[in-house]
Length: 253
Image (cartoon, rainbow, N blue to C red; front, side, top):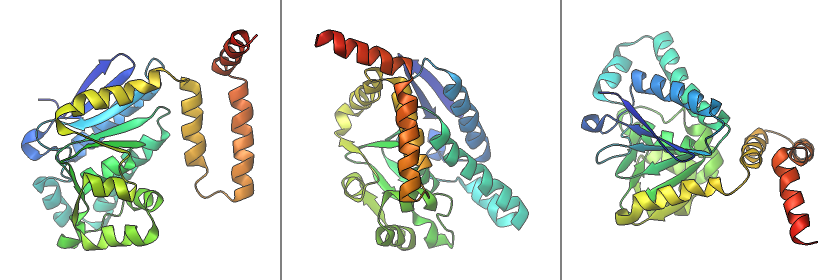
């Protein structure tokens, strides 16, 4: 059985974590499959969005028991290599040109919550649960911290990372970790509609907007403004923009 299922619907590619008996826990094989599949999707110019979701009852519960056992038995160098592989996955989500959407149902805990947080957008069911319980076993939600710190306030990030509590989808939305909470019974339809929105806007403009937004991390105000000016000029030169302007002018002439 494949750890990852891939399906296309129009311009949207859905990647389904397919380890339901393990609550879709991340292991080295699944992480590598996700990276390879995201790279393939990034190269497909017909796609407008990517959805990541989980099979069975949960989105993703973090690492499985075998992975945790390996952690406890590995050297510092081996653990560093493993951690860097997960970091590469999370960073890759930001580098993929099109939006990557986490569709969360059930539980998104530890690395699973990290995976959702690393995505550009998060849609959740009303019954979904989130959390970073790593501190309860002496671990740290370290790889996702760079994303968590950018999504919520410093004090909220500290509380989430050091208390290890679970929280509801409604609370995740209030904190800024979730974009929209949808009813469980209409979740699939709602996710499909949300992802399909990107069929109605310029692909090149979305790709450029995503890159600009994340490139601004760490820039000074003046450098960010200059990056915006360059992105603006680049957008003006695109075929989408030229066609859009021509259509607007013709409609109003």
